[in-house]
Image (cartoon, rainbow over all chains, first blue to last red):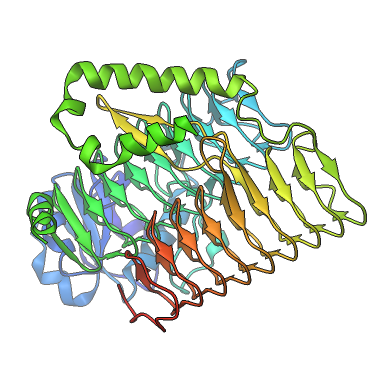
Length: 292
Length: 233
């Protein structure tokens, strides 16, 4: 598909290009289109070989290589989501629908509300009181979803340029084996064709919010009140403390320890401790603490 | 209880970080013990504190509230609003109000990483809410492990979206503002005021009359009558 065929009046084409899917800075869909707002996004886009088109601000245009299609907009993210609401009418940009597959050994409370189609629930899954499960949600064996949680709610798009109700999410939520979702937690559906993924044995505590398109690795522990932005990649064995906040489109490495109340605004490498706004090496942190 | 003493000993850093606990044989035996405990103990009546549920007079309970009436004791003149979930082993005093969507007595967040796997510790305790407590919407109060109670003292106010972790003891006339998170096994004294979106680490104690400003991170013990602690961490 050509970039020039789909963009609205608020965007301007700097270089035309082809794309066949939508994605984020870290995803690897074939020939994907992404948006870039920050300076730090440019290097990530050049490193990701599957990105073919970018929607960006006028100040960043000259930084992208010649083979990429580039479109200009004052508010790149809102014109990107406007493009998504156009493309969600095409079947190749939406996950295929399927009938409900609910295992007979799953324990589902009578007050839980489950969508009429597109829900897969595996063996020994426990779904407690007042849980709402939207379509395109896949829950694998041994997972637990506790009271008043919402799986697969439609994400709200930041920015006032477009009407929130227009954007139809075309992705879903994928909970792997033995995931534990505690009370009053909300997991958003992915907006693009793909899943918001929670890895094996990851446990998510009460009152958390997980944004659209986020992917959390295996054996992570996420404490109460954590807000995870959209399209965040979190590695394996991470620990995220109470009331921490994670910015949109960042990558958090394996074995990372984010202390309570921190705000994470940039990428974090493996084996780091994050305290407030700063990150230091985990082994060095342990040495300092022992020396005190 | 003996079980609790054993668990506390195993959790202490002197034991948990020692090389002996990290040997593969020890890790494997710990894993077997914990899975055995998780499977067997909830089926016995050893730690079931509330054996017969009772319901007092003059209560206003909305029909969409889900309450395990067989294992919950509720006093008189309580107000329980829409979509509230009250799990078993909960004791509620007189004149308590609970807001929309609150979850009382759900499973706590206590997990052990043994032999490369995460194994949850099944919680067997309950929650006690004393008289004249006001609990606002979307508050989560977890039950305590090993037959103990999470306690909320008389005339306390807990505002919307607060998480009260497992095994916490809250004193009398305490105010906890919106969005605060309190870690497990913390002790909060009488007349404490906690501001909005505070994070309080697990296992610490706040003395009598402590005032904590908004957006604070508290990781150490604060003694009584010491005034305000600085903003930030």
